Length: 214
Image (cartoon, rainbow, N blue to C red; front, side, top):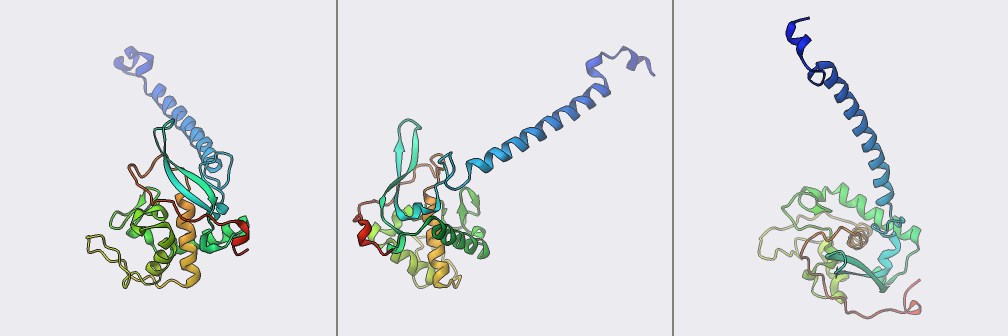
């Protein structure tokens, strides 16, 4: 043992910092495990947190309005305005939304688009695509989205960018699933993201239950 090692204070010893590194690593691993389980609870569809809605939210009108208490916009769930004019059970809505999610993943949409802040920035962010004012109005939205996803080349919407989406050649069921997924995703509380987003006006007719195809 050298004289320098003998005279070094305890807090400068190699053994002390080795123990500190082990303790900090173990503690942060425990914190990560706790946060992981907490996150799973928070992001559960229809969970108690209310941040991620149940899949059957696609049966309702979805808005995006400023909340003065939170100082940013939040999703609002309105009256019955079912997707494709059909009220779905929670089970059927989940199946449709999941079909759309799997379709988006299978077609690698995030190679160009951004979803919930993840992905590329070549094409528009899809987080609130259902509420995008570019669809014109609430009444034409489903038809325009269906036409665009069926043949995005013939129904291209470049908005001056000259960027054209290639045709993913979706089936009719896949198109309906993607639209359901986009509507459900627009109801997720994303803490005001995207900032400054102006939603499509929500002023269409409200259907009574007996007017809707069950």
